[in-house]
Image 1 (tube, each protein chain N blue to C red):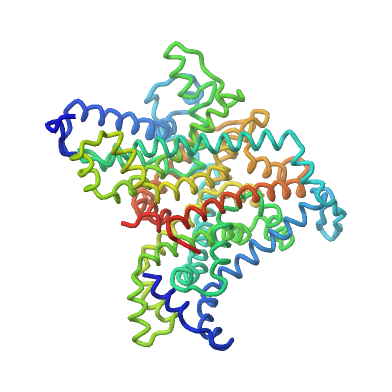
Image 2 (cartoon, rainbow over the protein chains, first blue to last red; image 1 turned 30 degrees about the vertical axis):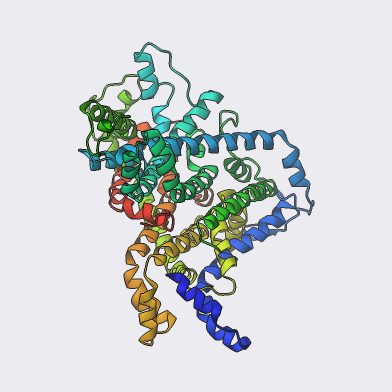
Length: 320
Length: 284
C-alpha cells in the first residue's frame, strides 16, 4: 500500500538540494492551499488571540470606527494577569469540574448505550433495517433543531415530559430551572444526540470481527461474557479508540446543546468552558482579552487530548 | 456447559427473540419520540400547545406552517443557510482535496507538521478563534456579510476535510498511481485524471460533512450575523423562543421544515459518513 511509495522515497539517496526540491515540490504544492488557508485563517487569528490574551482589551477600549471618527485602541499589555485571574478563580475550577463531568458522563453513556444497541443490531433478525433507520434518526436531525425540541419537551409548564409525570401521579420537575435537573437535562439531550453515531461506528467495527473467532470460542465452550470480553472488546479496539477520542473532543466542545437548551443557566450551572468563554466575549461588556485567555487555556487542555489521540493512532501502526 | 447446549448463533429461543425485539422497540421509541412529538405539536393551534394537556391530535391545523412561511423571514433564513453552507462545502473540498492526497501518498519534509496542524486545528474549540476572527472581520467590514461567515467556517472544515479525504485516498490502491506514473502522468495528472474520478464518493462525503457543519453552526452565526435579513436558520430559529416570548408553534413548524429534508438526505448518505469519520480504523 502506501508504504511502497514511502519506502522508495526513504531509500532514495538525497544528492543535493536540487534533487531534494525536484523530489518534493509537488507534495508541497499540493499541501500549499491548506497550509496557506490555515496560516492565514487560523495562524493569524491565533497569534492575535495570544496577544489579546496578554492585554486588557474589552469592547470599551478597543479601536473602532464610528461614522467618520476613528477611535484608537487604548488597551494595554498586562502580561499574564488574565491567566493568573483565571487559574486562581473559583469559576475556573467549577467550570472545569463540570466540563470534565459532562464530558465523561456523556461519552461513557454514548459508548455504553451505543455498544449495546450495536450488539443488538448485529444479529440476524426481522425488521433490522427499520430499527436501524429509527435509531439513527436523532443524528439525522440538525443539532440546533434537537436542542429546541428538547427545550420544548422539558418545558416546565406545558412540556410533555412533565405532563407525563403529572399523569403518572408524580409532581412535575422544573427541568431547566433547577441547577441539578438542568445538568441532567443537557446530558440527556446530548446523549440522545450522540448515541447514533457511536452505534453505527461500533456496528461497523463489530461486523469487521471475523465470525470464525466467535464460532471457535463457542465450540471451545466459552460463555457469552467470555466471548464478549476476549473477542468482541479487543476486536473493537481500533474503532473504539478512534470514536471515543472523537466523541471526547466533540463533547468537550459541544456548544449548541448547552447554549440553546439552557444558555448555560440557571446561574451558570450548566456552563461548560466553551460556552463560558463565548459569553464573556459576546455578552454584556465584551471582555475580549479575558475570553481569549480562556480560549488559550481550553486549547492547552485539547492539545493534551491530541497527544493522547496521536499515541493511540501510533499504537495502531499509523506512525507519523 | 454441555455440548448439547451449543447452538449456532443464528438460532434463538422465542423468548430471547421477544426480548430482543422489545428492547429495540423501546430504544426506537426513545429515539423517535422527540421528533414525532415535534411533528404533532407543529400541527396544533397555539392555544392547545400552551396547555399542559398531552393529547396526540387536537384540532389539527396547518396554521403554524402558513404563518412561518408567510409572515416570518423563514424562507430568507433558509436561503441564507443554503448559500453559506454550499459555499463552505465547495470551497472546503476544493482547498483540501490535493492536501488529502499528498498526505496520503507522499512522505515529504514537513509531513509530520502538516498532520499535526490538521489534527489540532480541527479540534479547536469555537472560543479560541472567534474573538480574533470577529475583530478581523469587523476591520474588513465583513461582519453581517456571508463571506465573513464562510471564512470563519473554513477554519474548521478545511482541516477536517483534508483529514477525512486522506482516509479515503488511503483506500484507493497505490497501484493505480503507479500505473499512471508508468504511463507518463505527472503527480498532478495522476491525481486529477485517475484519483479524483475514483474518489468521487469520498469527495462527496467530505463536501456533505462540511455542508452539515455550516448548516448547524450556532456560535459564529450568532455572533457575526447582526441583522435579521442575514440570519441563518440556526440564529433565526432562536428568535422564535426569545427571553420574553416563546412562539412554540412557529418554532416547531420551522423545525419540521428544516428537519425533514435534512434527515432525508442524511439517512441516504449516513453509511458513507460513518466510514469517512472512522476511516483507517476499520480495516474491512
